[in-house]
Image: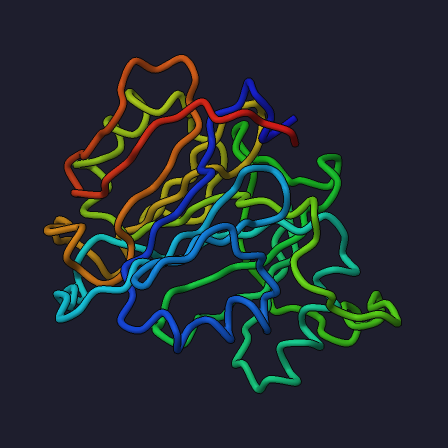
Length: 265
Protein backbone atom coordinates (compact mmCIF):
# COMPACT_ATOMS: atom_id res chain seq x y z
CA UNK A 1 0.00 0.00 0.00
CA UNK A 2 2.59 2.56 1.10
CA UNK A 3 5.28 1.37 -1.32
CA UNK A 4 3.20 -0.07 -4.16
CA UNK A 5 3.10 0.93 -7.83
CA UNK A 6 0.95 3.97 -7.04
CA UNK A 7 3.28 5.36 -4.38
CA UNK A 8 6.25 7.72 -4.68
CA UNK A 9 9.24 6.57 -2.66
CA UNK A 10 12.99 5.99 -2.53
CA UNK A 11 14.02 2.60 -3.94
CA UNK A 12 17.75 3.03 -4.35
CA UNK A 13 20.69 4.74 -2.63
CA UNK A 14 24.23 5.12 -3.96
CA UNK A 15 26.95 5.87 -1.42
CA UNK A 16 30.50 6.88 -2.28
CA UNK A 17 32.84 5.05 0.09
CA UNK A 18 36.54 4.93 0.89
CA UNK A 19 37.08 1.17 0.95
CA UNK A 20 34.32 -1.19 -0.12
CA UNK A 21 36.24 -4.28 1.00
CA UNK A 22 36.41 -2.87 4.53
CA UNK A 23 32.64 -2.41 4.43
CA UNK A 24 31.71 -5.81 3.01
CA UNK A 25 31.65 -7.61 6.42
CA UNK A 26 29.22 -5.00 7.76
CA UNK A 27 26.81 -5.14 4.84
CA UNK A 28 27.06 -8.88 4.19
CA UNK A 29 27.84 -10.58 7.51
CA UNK A 30 26.16 -8.19 9.94
CA UNK A 31 23.22 -6.82 7.95
CA UNK A 32 23.00 -9.90 5.76
CA UNK A 33 22.35 -8.14 2.45
CA UNK A 34 22.55 -10.14 -0.75
CA UNK A 35 24.96 -9.12 -3.51
CA UNK A 36 23.38 -8.35 -6.89
CA UNK A 37 26.53 -7.30 -8.71
CA UNK A 38 30.15 -6.54 -7.84
CA UNK A 39 33.02 -4.95 -9.76
CA UNK A 40 36.50 -3.87 -8.68
CA UNK A 41 35.20 -0.50 -7.48
CA UNK A 42 31.49 -1.00 -6.75
CA UNK A 43 29.05 -3.38 -5.16
CA UNK A 44 25.28 -3.50 -5.39
CA UNK A 45 23.15 -4.96 -2.59
CA UNK A 46 19.51 -5.98 -2.63
CA UNK A 47 17.33 -4.85 0.28
CA UNK A 48 14.80 -7.67 0.52
CA UNK A 49 13.30 -8.90 -2.73
CA UNK A 50 11.33 -5.88 -3.93
CA UNK A 51 13.83 -4.17 -6.27
CA UNK A 52 15.24 -1.92 -3.54
CA UNK A 53 18.99 -1.44 -3.82
CA UNK A 54 21.96 0.04 -1.95
CA UNK A 55 25.07 0.61 -4.07
CA UNK A 56 28.57 1.32 -2.74
CA UNK A 57 31.04 3.02 -5.10
CA UNK A 58 34.67 3.18 -3.99
CA UNK A 59 36.42 6.50 -4.61
CA UNK A 60 40.18 6.97 -4.57
CA UNK A 61 41.11 10.34 -3.10
CA UNK A 62 37.51 11.49 -2.90
CA UNK A 63 36.38 14.77 -1.44
CA UNK A 64 35.42 14.93 2.24
CA UNK A 65 32.05 16.67 2.67
CA UNK A 66 31.73 19.57 5.08
CA UNK A 67 29.96 18.86 8.38
CA UNK A 68 27.45 21.55 7.42
CA UNK A 69 26.90 20.14 3.92
CA UNK A 70 23.66 18.58 2.71
CA UNK A 71 23.82 14.79 2.47
CA UNK A 72 22.74 11.59 4.17
CA UNK A 73 21.15 11.65 7.61
CA UNK A 74 20.05 8.03 7.54
CA UNK A 75 18.68 5.28 5.32
CA UNK A 76 15.52 3.89 6.92
CA UNK A 77 15.04 0.16 6.33
CA UNK A 78 11.53 -1.06 7.11
CA UNK A 79 11.34 -4.57 8.56
CA UNK A 80 8.16 -6.66 8.34
CA UNK A 81 7.89 -7.88 11.95
CA UNK A 82 8.80 -6.67 15.43
CA UNK A 83 10.60 -10.00 15.92
CA UNK A 84 12.95 -9.01 13.07
CA UNK A 85 13.86 -5.80 14.91
CA UNK A 86 14.41 -7.71 18.17
CA UNK A 87 16.58 -10.29 16.42
CA UNK A 88 18.62 -7.53 14.78
CA UNK A 89 19.25 -5.78 18.10
CA UNK A 90 20.63 -8.97 19.64
CA UNK A 91 22.69 -9.60 16.50
CA UNK A 92 24.20 -6.10 16.52
CA UNK A 93 25.13 -6.45 20.19
CA UNK A 94 27.11 -9.58 19.39
CA UNK A 95 29.24 -7.49 17.01
CA UNK A 96 29.58 -4.62 19.52
CA UNK A 97 27.86 -2.21 17.13
CA UNK A 98 26.83 0.97 19.03
CA UNK A 99 23.04 1.28 18.74
CA UNK A 100 20.49 3.87 19.80
CA UNK A 101 16.83 2.96 20.01
CA UNK A 102 13.66 4.97 19.92
CA UNK A 103 9.89 4.68 20.23
CA UNK A 104 7.74 6.96 18.12
CA UNK A 105 3.95 7.01 17.89
CA UNK A 106 4.17 5.28 14.50
CA UNK A 107 7.22 3.01 14.89
CA UNK A 108 9.99 1.33 16.86
CA UNK A 109 13.50 2.06 15.60
CA UNK A 110 17.18 1.18 15.93
CA UNK A 111 19.80 3.74 14.84
CA UNK A 112 23.43 2.91 14.01
CA UNK A 113 26.17 3.62 11.46
CA UNK A 114 28.30 1.64 9.05
CA UNK A 115 32.10 1.77 9.63
CA UNK A 116 32.40 4.89 7.46
CA UNK A 117 29.73 6.78 9.37
CA UNK A 118 26.77 6.37 7.00
CA UNK A 119 23.62 6.41 9.11
CA UNK A 120 20.99 3.66 9.20
CA UNK A 121 17.63 3.35 10.85
CA UNK A 122 16.00 -0.07 10.97
CA UNK A 123 12.38 0.14 12.04
CA UNK A 124 9.04 -1.59 12.25
CA UNK A 125 5.76 0.26 11.92
CA UNK A 126 3.00 0.12 14.46
CA UNK A 127 -0.53 -0.46 13.21
CA UNK A 128 -1.87 2.68 11.56
CA UNK A 129 -4.66 2.80 14.15
CA UNK A 130 -1.96 3.57 16.76
CA UNK A 131 -0.49 6.52 14.87
CA UNK A 132 -1.09 9.75 16.76
CA UNK A 133 -2.14 12.69 14.59
CA UNK A 134 -2.25 16.41 15.21
CA UNK A 135 -3.56 18.80 12.53
CA UNK A 136 -3.66 15.84 10.11
CA UNK A 137 0.08 15.19 10.59
CA UNK A 138 1.43 12.07 12.29
CA UNK A 139 3.34 13.00 15.43
CA UNK A 140 6.81 11.48 15.51
CA UNK A 141 8.34 12.75 18.72
CA UNK A 142 10.79 10.16 20.01
CA UNK A 143 11.22 8.46 23.39
CA UNK A 144 13.84 5.96 24.61
CA UNK A 145 13.33 2.37 23.53
CA UNK A 146 12.30 -0.21 26.12
CA UNK A 147 15.04 -2.72 25.29
CA UNK A 148 13.85 -5.65 27.48
CA UNK A 149 10.37 -5.36 26.00
CA UNK A 150 11.73 -5.39 22.45
CA UNK A 151 14.09 -8.31 23.14
CA UNK A 152 11.15 -10.33 24.47
CA UNK A 153 9.91 -10.53 20.84
CA UNK A 154 13.08 -12.27 19.60
CA UNK A 155 12.80 -15.71 18.02
CA UNK A 156 15.02 -18.73 18.60
CA UNK A 157 16.54 -18.48 15.12
CA UNK A 158 17.56 -14.84 15.71
CA UNK A 159 18.81 -12.70 12.78
CA UNK A 160 19.19 -14.68 9.57
CA UNK A 161 19.98 -11.77 7.28
CA UNK A 162 17.73 -9.16 5.74
CA UNK A 163 14.15 -10.51 5.43
CA UNK A 164 12.70 -10.93 1.95
CA UNK A 165 9.96 -8.38 2.70
CA UNK A 166 12.33 -5.68 3.99
CA UNK A 167 12.39 -2.47 1.95
CA UNK A 168 13.88 1.00 1.98
CA UNK A 169 11.00 2.54 3.90
CA UNK A 170 12.29 6.11 3.78
CA UNK A 171 15.32 8.32 3.30
CA UNK A 172 16.22 11.10 5.72
CA UNK A 173 18.63 13.74 4.44
CA UNK A 174 20.49 16.71 5.82
CA UNK A 175 19.54 19.72 3.74
CA UNK A 176 19.99 23.48 3.52
CA UNK A 177 17.58 25.87 5.24
CA UNK A 178 14.12 24.32 4.98
CA UNK A 179 12.60 27.55 3.69
CA UNK A 180 14.83 27.21 0.61
CA UNK A 181 13.85 23.61 -0.27
CA UNK A 182 10.32 22.98 1.03
CA UNK A 183 8.50 24.13 -2.11
CA UNK A 184 10.94 22.23 -4.34
CA UNK A 185 10.23 18.92 -2.63
CA UNK A 186 6.48 19.55 -2.54
CA UNK A 187 6.37 20.57 -6.21
CA UNK A 188 8.53 17.93 -7.90
CA UNK A 189 8.24 14.65 -5.97
CA UNK A 190 4.51 13.96 -5.77
CA UNK A 191 4.67 14.07 -1.97
CA UNK A 192 2.82 15.99 0.71
CA UNK A 193 3.62 16.92 4.26
CA UNK A 194 2.81 13.88 6.36
CA UNK A 195 4.31 14.08 9.86
CA UNK A 196 5.68 16.54 12.37
CA UNK A 197 8.69 16.36 14.70
CA UNK A 198 9.90 19.97 15.04
CA UNK A 199 10.22 23.20 13.07
CA UNK A 200 13.66 22.21 11.73
CA UNK A 201 12.56 19.07 9.89
CA UNK A 202 10.00 18.11 7.25
CA UNK A 203 8.49 14.68 6.67
CA UNK A 204 6.90 14.01 3.28
CA UNK A 205 5.03 10.98 1.94
CA UNK A 206 2.49 9.64 -0.53
CA UNK A 207 -0.40 7.17 -0.26
CA UNK A 208 -1.17 8.17 3.34
CA UNK A 209 2.19 7.03 4.75
CA UNK A 210 4.01 9.20 7.31
CA UNK A 211 7.51 9.14 5.79
CA UNK A 212 8.91 8.46 2.35
CA UNK A 213 11.37 11.35 2.26
CA UNK A 214 12.42 13.43 5.27
CA UNK A 215 14.89 16.27 5.66
CA UNK A 216 16.28 18.45 8.41
CA UNK A 217 18.54 21.46 8.83
CA UNK A 218 19.57 20.65 12.40
CA UNK A 219 23.29 20.92 11.62
CA UNK A 220 23.39 21.61 7.87
CA UNK A 221 23.07 24.74 5.73
CA UNK A 222 25.49 24.24 2.81
CA UNK A 223 24.58 22.93 -0.65
CA UNK A 224 25.90 19.52 -1.70
CA UNK A 225 28.57 19.85 -4.39
CA UNK A 226 30.61 17.43 -6.49
CA UNK A 227 28.21 14.57 -5.71
CA UNK A 228 30.06 11.96 -7.74
CA UNK A 229 33.45 12.80 -6.23
CA UNK A 230 32.40 13.29 -2.60
CA UNK A 231 32.17 10.62 0.09
CA UNK A 232 28.70 9.83 1.39
CA UNK A 233 25.38 10.22 -0.41
CA UNK A 234 25.85 10.34 -4.20
CA UNK A 235 22.54 9.40 -5.87
CA UNK A 236 18.95 8.80 -4.72
CA UNK A 237 16.73 6.61 -6.93
CA UNK A 238 13.10 7.66 -6.60
CA UNK A 239 10.05 5.71 -7.78
CA UNK A 240 7.68 8.19 -9.44
CA UNK A 241 6.02 6.75 -12.58
CA UNK A 242 4.01 9.88 -13.43
CA UNK A 243 6.90 12.33 -13.67
CA UNK A 244 8.56 13.33 -16.92
CA UNK A 245 11.82 14.13 -15.13
CA UNK A 246 14.71 11.71 -15.45
CA UNK A 247 17.28 13.41 -13.23
CA UNK A 248 16.82 16.27 -10.80
CA UNK A 249 19.18 18.31 -8.68
CA UNK A 250 17.55 20.96 -6.54
CA UNK A 251 18.57 23.84 -4.28
CA UNK A 252 20.30 21.54 -1.78
CA UNK A 253 22.40 19.81 -4.46
CA UNK A 254 21.12 16.28 -3.71
CA UNK A 255 21.01 14.28 -6.96
CA UNK A 256 17.86 12.27 -7.76
CA UNK A 257 17.10 9.78 -10.53
CA UNK A 258 13.42 9.07 -11.18
CA UNK A 259 12.27 5.61 -12.21
CA UNK A 260 9.25 3.35 -12.60
CA UNK A 261 10.95 0.06 -11.77
CA UNK A 262 8.48 -2.78 -11.31
CA UNK A 263 7.06 -2.92 -7.80
CA UNK A 264 6.39 -6.32 -6.24
CA UNK A 265 5.70 -5.17 -2.67
